[in-house]
Length: 383
Image (tube, rainbow, N blue to C red; front, side):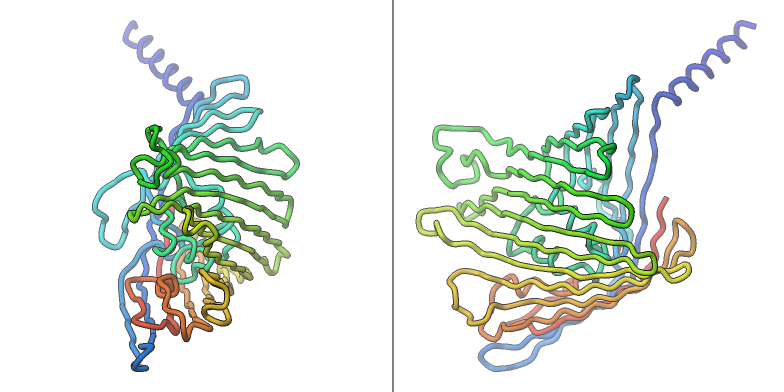
């Protein structure tokens, strides 16, 4: 009898605990066969070059990941939550497991949510939410490609560590928003005005915010963020990002658009007025067709680097992407994407950024870039 009562008590305690909290295991496995090619030419000899590659890749439709999230009901409308999310490389199994995609703990209630840890930056959201391809695969917009390029070298573009974020509550009649501060965690010293990474107290800091309105078929949001970077050359830069995105779902078609400006602002006596600006825009659409979805996007970015008129008309990169997703179920989908990148007004332009904008993979440009093409054929399974 005592054993029976003890067992019943244990079951009741377990039931009470499960009613108060929950933990979910979730993930995405996305693998694709991809082909990438790029053409360029030598500025002096005129010789043409071409690189191409077949590869088994991952994250062509959704980012492959493995995660754990949970919520505990604290009563009175208050809840504590955690989110641990790790990237996985589904094409080769990866080399290790870490929670670099997201690692947060938060407290939420009628006041909104306060979230601590490594999280997506406020300014990245517009690039991915208002891109029909969600910044994944060959269809990723050139706005995202520029912002995340090796030329800008901005580790705070997609995510920032050490952040303190506040999110508005969801009951504001469609209005939403967030503010975010990423601590630099540097030791402040009396020589902090120098430009070395070890003594610049602001190196690694991120400050940003995003505010929008979503009601029915309409979603519109604006964001601004600033990252402080100190390069190995001891040069301090502030990367300032501002964008405005919108989507409207008409039913038969959903339209997307975005305007973006990224400013690479150098600090220093000799470079006080030296800024690199990258102005971009995107127009896109998705069309549901039975169990499938057609996706299309056109994006462009114009470079404004250094002295005015140095290259005549400013160099510009353009991208057209078209894709189709066929849903075999709510969790499993087949997809295909084709994308084409063209570079314009770059006859005298040999900047590193132009060399970085291809459709993906390991292919690149030798000399002056001309065009690149990418194809993805993949399967995505979510759980």
